[in-house]
Length: 368
Length: 271
Ligand SMILES: Nc1ncnc2c1ncn2[C@@H]1O[C@H](COP(=O)(O)OP(=O)(O)O)[C@@H](O)[C@H]1O
Ligand SMILES: [Mg+2]
Image (cartoon, rainbow over all chains, first blue to last red; front, side, top):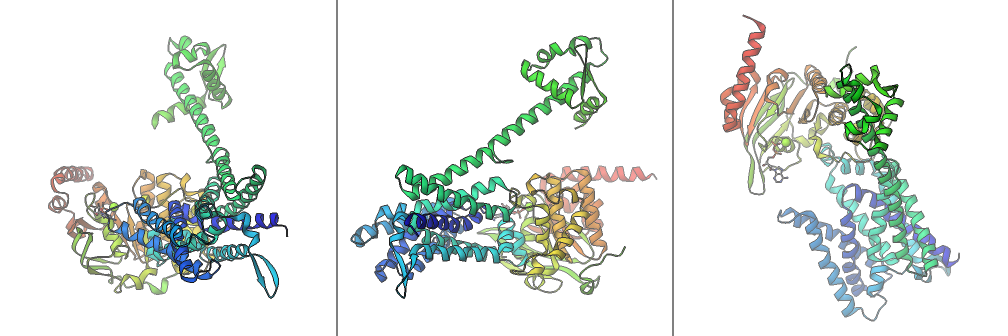
């Protein structure tokens, strides 16, 4: 396989591995937690490295994941004191761990392959250089294996505990009353998030882990009303963003991880604008429609007030419509068109007349 | 058509105690929210818990269900601790306690009522689906079964919760303000369902905020304000002096309204 293909596959696998726990993070309104974890694990990585002196050792993965869980626990303890809000306690805990990690790197690990650039942005472009070999055979990039296994663990966890994750995310009180401990699920999800952040860290660095965990699920959330669809859609969006990001990076000769995150953000922007029901455009269209339909009701009420009175010939002339109701001409025309089309009003020699349906509309609007 | 309850075999004797609370004290940090509550509710009653805002009504239910750890006291459901009786208890939380924008449908949410019976990992199947559809029909939401729950009105959401409690097929029900944000027709529909449950011999315990309808809807009532003011059959316990004890200064208003209402009710019957 060419390095270019390997990088794209790795990018896609990292993105999917991150998107899976990300779905539940955003549904639980815990996006910030992924930020905290992906930074705090640096502390575990450095400590692990200082102990075993080998960046490829699984000890590092375990130490880092443990730091992630430690972050969650410390945040929870701090919040429980009731002195600070949850987001404050997150903001207090992870910078401490992250900054200790940064200080340790600059002091002790200055001469090894661990620098702050790599920490923030990762080095996915170099991933194909670090190969996994077994019995003299080349098995592919090492990080592809690490992230691949983590992705599979995430997938199995979500498939097994789909029902429990759904219940504890939607209604933790019912979950607890039925004996499904929301706390157990919380820590399980946080452990997965930590492991995923550690695995992805190598490839895309701590800042971009957050983007990959949050953006694809947030985009999928705009596009569907089903949790299962949201999960698959997140994975698909993650893959598209990763591959598109790679080509953007090739084209711009820029950081692959940076471009992956940019594409993830761009896809979200697209969804935010164009999503069928929750997008801005759909929202604007719905507002406009509501405004017109409300105006039609207002028109029927106006007409019903003057129906059969002397002033009817004045008040109900189509030419005077805008003037009486304070509408500009195009809007007044649109409202009248809609009213005629829906059969609420008829035109008779330039005079607007209510139909039975129009009268009923005015009556029910009044009754409300 | 006879009701076929999955628990026909487990139906308790009518004289057994549904809920027994003894010396229950709950505090959030150092602030006591419930003081030394004693409560005993028999099976086959429809009971209201009333009290002013912040009286601890929600906290009482949450601590009976083990969702809040009490500082002191004991809770028994049908003679055993709650943890042993989970399967016999149905719960309707306050509507505001969940995120209605969650990507899930009415049918999905109602099926959640069967999760306890399924236990860990096992997925709901056709039987659960059928039970849920039946319950959805009972609360009149069949046409909306595939809607995302956020697209429903407040009253419809409340009925989704009720349907979910119905598929739990429990013996003791706890409901936190099921009439909140509900129109008059829905309120009728809900109270009819609650009465049916009571008539089947179950215990239904409802946090309620409308004093005007207590006498009409319920046969038992507990008045609560940090302490238990009174608890028992409505005609014995729902008195002006107890209301004054529970609601303090504002009781004057309530009791006058109630008196007028009773007057009107009597007048309507004619001498
Ligand atoms: N999680 C909590 N932490 C701290 N105080 C709480 C918490 N939940 C409720 N309270 C306080 O406990 C009191 C009782 O609340 P609650 O049981 O919700 O009352 P009610 O349901 O009768 O309105 C209130 O004063 C409320 O502010
Ligand atoms: Mg309450």
